Length: 142
Image 1 (cartoon, one colour):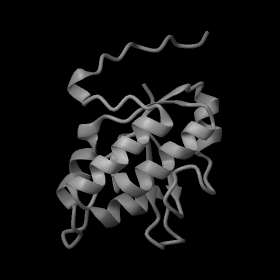
Image 2: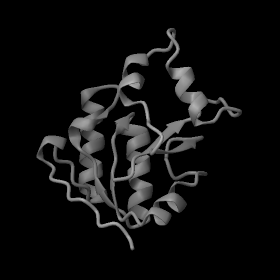
Image 3: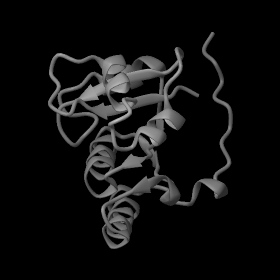
Image 4: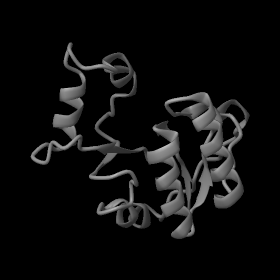
């Protein structure tokens, strides 16, 4: 299953993804421990985004089409902004959505729950917790 990291560029317009990861792993970076746990490996893909949605002004849709992806599992921080806006744009492009409720976070629990409800109701996403998902292996092409 392909893993695609979609991250803000944090206004660092000359940085690439690896530079962003290195920046976030600095001792002075907040969230360093989380970045260490989620650090990508050489087989993962990455997209830097300038705004809230992973699709806005990025190559994400082109990459997903190239990989033959029809269903997305969205996780992340800023559930009520980045995840919500990315989910909306994915829905508008006819992707099926899984947004596990225990795999997104917002500033407050209330905001997170509101975002999840909108994602479920309007974007027809499956928001079951990750522990209740059963994922099947995708058949490889060729």
